[in-house]
Length: 140
Image (spheres, rainbow, N blue to C red):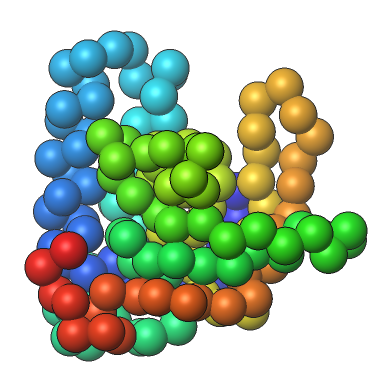
């Protein structure tokens, strides 16, 4: 996965994602869960206070509209922690390939997603329907 912009995470998201990594590593080997990729993202991210995050950046618990390139098929998903994941309700884990591509991405950005056993996909972030920080919800 490549990014077009610098990765920014809120202090709260970064701290919770670190705890999530530790919990996941206790449960199963890292190669089975996407934890190594998420750890690399955390290492490269600029950590900013929640009140300073750009309202166009996808943070945890954000709801975003994605458009598949070139088909223009649209889907709405919410980025969540692994324990809250429910693909049937479009609640996508941050440890999934799509979730890792979304965290810290910006509206208008196209992210490349490699899903094991499937061809790579390009997804354009077309709309951020809800970002907790922009809504003043700094503790979600």
